[in-house]
Length: 517
Image: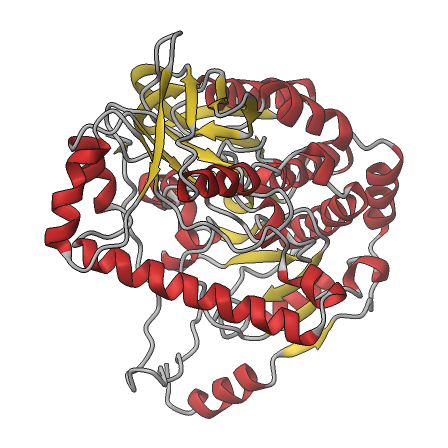
């Protein structure tokens, strides 16, 4: 690119936020709006996917059930779809988790086994609970380590409060709020420093505890909201690891501190299934005039499994499926081929979409546009040009056809900068394809539903999801009908102020095709 563009690009980056207003009328848009509002299938699809199939952790039977379900749904709409294998993963199936305090009193506790963790027998594990000690150095910790044999060990910090900061700000005195934060900061600092003194970090200490004979490990990854914990995967090889709700975890921790010698029983019935194939589900409405060029509707299909994956990324999946249904009904013979990509194993590193990019260069080279939706149930409020120099020209042209009650919420940034890897659009963008993230309103996503035990159907805001269906369907139609092929010319990226070096365009990365081992 010529140097003459540099000052222009920097100026655009600095002054990028623009609202889109409706300028043109496209007859099909009214039909899209009517179909989305009057004949929506969103609620049924959401129920079947989230309530009936449930979470979609890669390598689980539920993930494969979801793949097959999607193919079946597309078939009912006369849309061609298939499951395309991209790799293998450690097969695992979650069973019942039951955790009970059995001494000094009886109480059922809230928590769940972490993913890919070996299951227990029907009898489970019952043992006294202990906490990590405060030590002066690694030698003292090594001297303590044999005491974990046969014990259940709490491995997370005890939180000072189960109330999120916004609740303190509303009701506490300023002095009380500041005092709480200071105490919490001091506790976190001491916890981190003590962990350093053990000679381990939060990951490596798990292996040391298991090797020393711990009966089970209990963590509590609070998500800074009422009743929410983030649920990820276990790192133990033979013993159970569970995440426990903050309220119960802190209670057990206090019992240990006061010398009550609490005992808990853990039953975690999961199954190992060996290596299993993993898939992307790909749906297609074949183009008529330019079938070798593609508009792609993109959303990852997998989820973590603390909840049912409703807003991460059930809602993105629903948007793309419903948009495809509407397009097939109202626009059955598109100019360009329209694909829906439901990617597997996004949560472990964009694996499904990276595999598709690697396996289908002929498609990637001919992408007209890709629209990806991932970050929650909210209406789309931001669209970036992704670092493509001429993205303003075609994206604003397409957005002009979007109804004003949808487009009025959207701020645009042109030409923007390329995303580094937060969701599947980045897999295509790194390969040079014009791929765009439809970024949505938060609805407290990061605290309450992102990878948490509360990411469930009831958090879906269907009015906002319908808004996104209309937006996606109109953008797909406009991109398909556009007489021009979209430009892939990239901006000159600005200097990184931290390093003083020129930023570079992301480069494609290979997927992990045999994971979870």
